Image 1 (cartoon, rainbow, N blue to C red):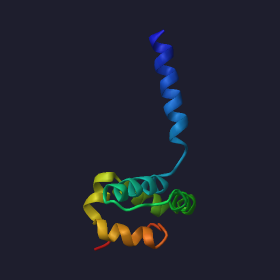
Image 2: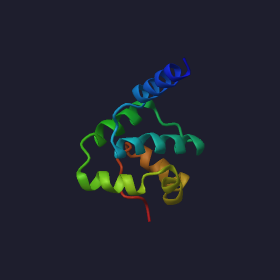
Image 3: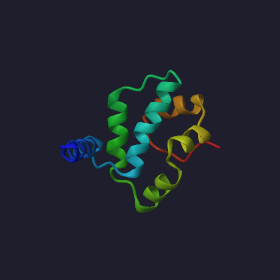
Length: 97
């Protein structure tokens, strides 16, 4: 019984996570960080970011996997640069310097 509950839970979690690539996942992380910065990001902007990143190149995907954790984002971006990012439509550029 416990095993079937565990398998069901894992299956449900997998289904909810979708099949986003590493760059698409950054869209959600950046939106979460924006929320922490009291920046309102409409769902439509998050959706547009995810859609744009569906065509990420191999090099982009590699960079997103290497530098796309929530910690990396919080280290590289300030709330101010994050506000500029979302004001610009949520296209993932290199982190600000």
